[in-house]
Image 1 (cartoon, rainbow, N blue to C red):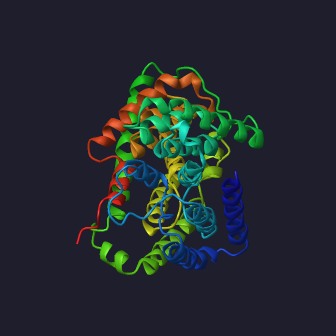
Image 2 (cartoon, helix red, strand yellow):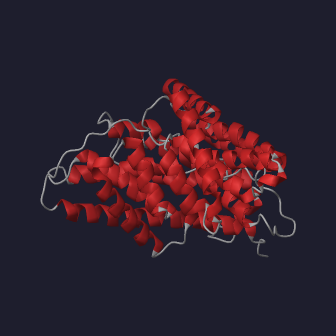
Image 3 (cartoon, helix red, strand yellow):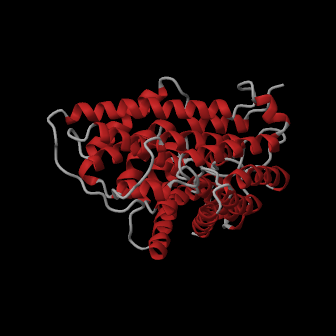
Length: 401
């Protein structure tokens, strides 16, 4: 909850200043991005990026850490994730707080391992998975999605005996989240209508294909942009990471000005406005958010991609809904595209459709949600490896010379 409050304050502070001085992003984005990356590398190595790959990597190396392994879960990193993650949002970067919340939850639970009685026989990696799942549940106020996330992303290969610990952690996170935030949905309540066309199933399949291709391309570009031995600019990033972050920040500022300031921050406000039919966004909002998020993640600042990915999916859905206005309900298209794009990026379709279903109380379109998420994920998998798994493997593999 602390991170959520810091993130909202940071985004609002950025917007308040930008409303009075349109040139503010051109200054704060490069300077702030460079400062955040410098501080991350200097004092909080391991806090950069999403946080989900770090949790997965720690689970995998729990029993046999490689030589020279530097822990990625600690209370020091939690501090860096909180402060520098909020600072990146204040600098206008397009990032989310949900991925970092996974690392924070995993780190907090990891710190408790040595304090538990040994007779309980609770393994460290079980606590990491439980903490990460609780982080997702608390961030989105979606307890069921926390369970699905743990099974699909964090719990692969772990024994089933940890399920009780996992569910307890998620239920507690859900209780605390609802006590502080109330019994609300993440994006509010979305109204659905019945079939507008007997060809709706065809349009649903086309939505799945579009989201699968777009989400797969996004994940593929993210992996290329963060590969130490990747494209031509990798050598410059490896040699001058702070200057590289400044260049990324300048490009993010330019994109934000083109997007009429809609591409800055998490994208939560813009996405919620789209769901509530109260958005005045440019038609290229989804494209702007796509590239702003890509640059933000590639820069190396602490920050996740869950919320921006949902915003990109909603932007794509808004454009498709305009084209299919007489064929399928707008609210349905937005929900399906949000889930489909998230499923394609993460290749965790069950988590994707459960998160979106709980966020908007979308039980009326659950079959369509499942279909779009599964198909979009399968299409993405055809030309892109699993995003978080690939990043985790990079963390556990020695750098190539």
